[in-house]
Length: 92
Image (cartoon, rainbow, N blue to C red; front, side, top):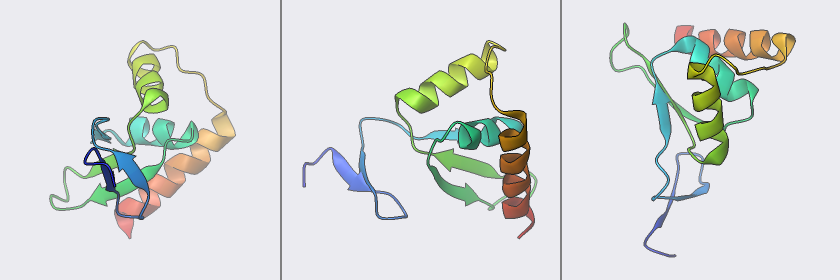
C-alpha cells in the first residue's frame, strides 16, 4: 500500500493527504451527511463538545464552503432525517 494511503475505522482506504472534516456543529454535521459525505466517527470524549468526523475531499470541501457562505441547498426532508440520525448517535 502506498505510504500516503491508510484505512479509516470502517476499513475504507483513504488518502492521508486529504484531511478529514471534523465539526462540533450538529447542523453542519447533518449537512455533510445529507450531501453524502462518508461519516467516520463521533468522538464522545467530552459530552458537552462531541466531534463528528467525515471523510475529506472535494465534496466535503464544497459542503463546508457553501454552508459558511450561506448558499448550501439541500433536500429539507433528507436534512431532517440526517439531523435525527446525528442526534440519535449523540444520545446512544
